[in-house]
Length: 249
Ligand code: MN3
Image 1 (cartoon, rainbow, N blue to C red):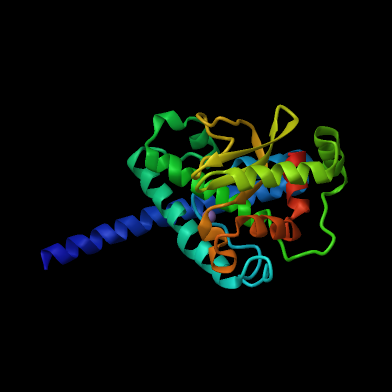
Image 2: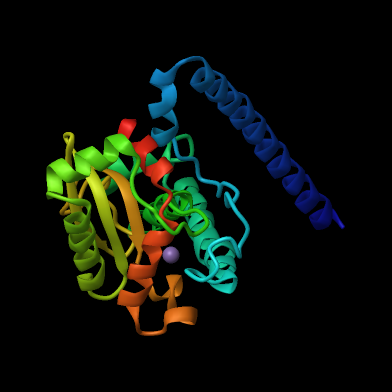
């Protein structure tokens, strides 16, 4: 009986602490929302402050149908990505990183465990990946400013796409391909596992603008071993408005 009471008291304390943390986040995110409304300078802020919780998927599971099927989206979001978020919270608690943003953790990863590396990366990458997509468009090309920058750096959009496809196709095993900005120079590269260009130990370094998940869990139900078909089809769902916002930030 005494044990049960103790357990209940512990649960209550846990809930209270959690409750106050949530309240704290509520106020600060409301503050940043107001800031971003009042000043365009603060557009950049939202791209440098990723929390540990999953944000809601910005569309329904079947919104990308014909490119990515609903079942893949649901499993990917509610199982794989949820797992990274939960494991990140565990690692942050165990390693004293609870008050930090994911970006702060990624920038000083050598201080943390492999569990932190995999899950902070996994969470960051997926939070970005969902937003990099929208329902399929027939004519889908970058917004004006980014389109110009891509043409400047890669010669043409077609060249850019081919280089990006090569990076995504040739990543051995599981990983990601990226368009990223390295001191205002646009570059293409890929990373293994859940690594990304924000990580202190990554071979490629910069700010990610667009990323594609080439883990088999992202495409296997529909495409099986045909990763190249998934990549080619994926261009129809790229949310260029969001990529442009990251570019401007
Ligand atoms: Mn994934």
